[in-house]
Amino acid sequence: MLDATAKSVLEDCEVVAIATQGPDGPHLVATWGDYVRRLGIGDCLLIPVGTLRTTEENLRRDPRVVLLAGSLRVPGRAGPGQGVRLTGPGRIVTAGADAERVRQAFPWARGALAVQVTQVETLL
Ligand SMILES: Cc1cc2nc3c(=O)[nH]c(=O)nc-3n(C[C@H](O)[C@H](O)[C@H](O)COP(=O)(O)O)c2cc1C
Image (cartoon, rainbow, N blue to C red):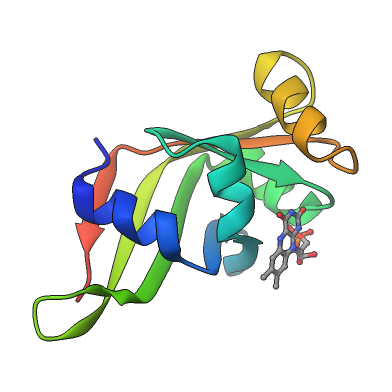
């Protein structure tokens, strides 16, 4: 699912924005690109969960997650800079293999936000 462009952006981005849908509108949080890289870039992306309580509540009602990442060093169609929007269902897990993997890398984490990417869009 993740294409070469999406992988390049994820390999180089500083921040990944994470949007969920709340009862009153979109809710936006973030993680560091470095955290995502440390957990492995693949079709199921893992994000360490410290707080993300509102995100967790939102996901119980509506599992849709949109991630946005960009890098000025990855070329876009019109010049330097590329960004990708990654969409798919997400859930926060506090037990099981994904949660353990995240806690090993980030002992402060209470679990993992696992996002299964089902749609990739290139924005630049
Ligand atoms: C650049 C950036 C990276 C962040 N990385 C994480 C992270 O990896 N895990 C986490 O739980 N919170 C992280 N945070 C903090 C959360 O985004 C923030 O505390 C959030 O508002 C709490 O989640 P909630 O609003 O869903 O309750 C980060 C914030 C920023 C701005």
